[in-house]
Length: 289
View (cartoon, rainbow, N blue to C red):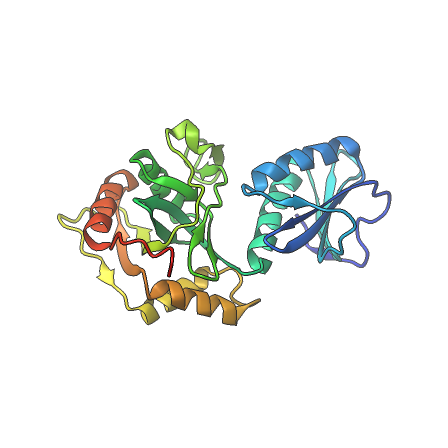
């Protein structure tokens, strides 16, 4: 898509709209074609895998315009930024990503980390990582071994340091090719999604390394300060709300174990991770802390 900055884009002939509020972020979504608008509304419930409100007559900070234009193309704009024209499938894909990242960056009283998250025996394993680092593959293997699924994209941490579910469909690469994502509901993989806030037990900073097969896994333990420095690049809102993000990370890092290590194939590594977690993490509940 072409990045073209213009004033008052996509605003002609807009007939249909829905206003939503997610984690305190107010967004208005508009379109000029009813059939396309109905598709957008259906996709919302896949894009945002948590309860959200639809509201009327609110003042929205972010306005998304998705309009049908000429030659079977569609146009996508956010406020006064025109993100360009493309096919319907591409526009919906970009909309999906842009909507989630907007929520993640500007959420009120929540810190979003780009990370995979599962629950094991009442505590969260958070795996911060950039795209194409295999976090979804590792999350999938952990889910197959009985972990509750929380997210393959965002760890949502509240002001008290607890993790909330963001159970979007798992987006796995390697089914079609190494870049194309195929979405799966966690239930189709034999897993279940978590539904409650939970304390953090472990942060794992890791990346795949071809041929990595240790006889015994001995990750490097990081201090709270070292861990925060490693985690900060994965915080979506770090520039928008730095003080709150750091305060929240400090609270979590003082309670959780933070380790760093390379890893091998997810299927084998998942067992090592679970064994390590059960040996090193304190299972005493801290929900009342």
